[in-house]
Amino acid sequence: MRKSLQLQAEMSEEFGTCVFDVTLDCEDGAPVGGEADHAALVVSLVAGAGASARVAVRVHALDHPAFEADIGAIAGQVGQRLTHLMVPKVESVADVDRVVAALAAVSCGDLPIHVLLESPAAVHHAFEIAAHPRVQSLSFGLMDFVSSHGGAIPAGGMSSQGQFSHPLVLRAKLEIASACHANGKVPSHCVVTEFSDTAAMKTAALKAARELGYTRMWSIHPAQIRPILEAFAPDQRDIEIATKIIAAAARADWAPIPFEGQLHDRASYRYFWQVLERAHQTGRVLPPEMQGYFAAAPH
Image (tube, rainbow, N blue to C red):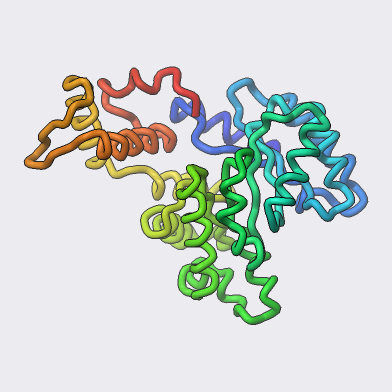
């Protein structure tokens, strides 16, 4: 956790903006019987993080005895420093409501909630969960999803290649991405466990971004962060085109304009503005005429 926070600070300085969040893990990070001590460590790390750090916490699942204690100890003490709370194994809207109530009890009623969908039932309810006003993002929990099928999905469904080819896994990913986009939420793609295989990591990230509509992705090792950023960043040519179109639109007070033989209006302006946003968020250097738009923009 300390290394992750240090790397975030170093890369923020390198890129001029924070290009990834750090999620401090209680669910898999705390040893059995040591949940309270681990939560105290998380609190100290969040409290000691820099003012520009983007830090979240994954608490224990709702059915774990430490869930309420995690909320009280972490959100209750440093909730105002968190970018969001990550809750694993959410199955329904009722589960989200339980999280909302727990946060309200410790005066964290405004903290965004990110949820992990990790079972067939959870995926079935993806659209309802994404519609909840407190949910900001849905993540797909690949390994638990495969395991929840009782062997019906082979182990290869968890690999960097198999997770994009097995029909049940692919269907779940598409449902989650579609649910997020239908409700203006952020779809976050699952992990790639082959953390030493850079080529597999980049291929998976490109598929997630270009084919499945995901706009965030989990990493489980520092070596995965740059390949993810490269895959999710727009091409330089796309940035140049977006810059020209947005600059021309601004000069025309956002009226329709011609550009290279095509008509553009507010619908396409939104698209090209989003290209520039993604460029900024992934650490790409924007042309000078666009930098002013992002100089003080929150990530």
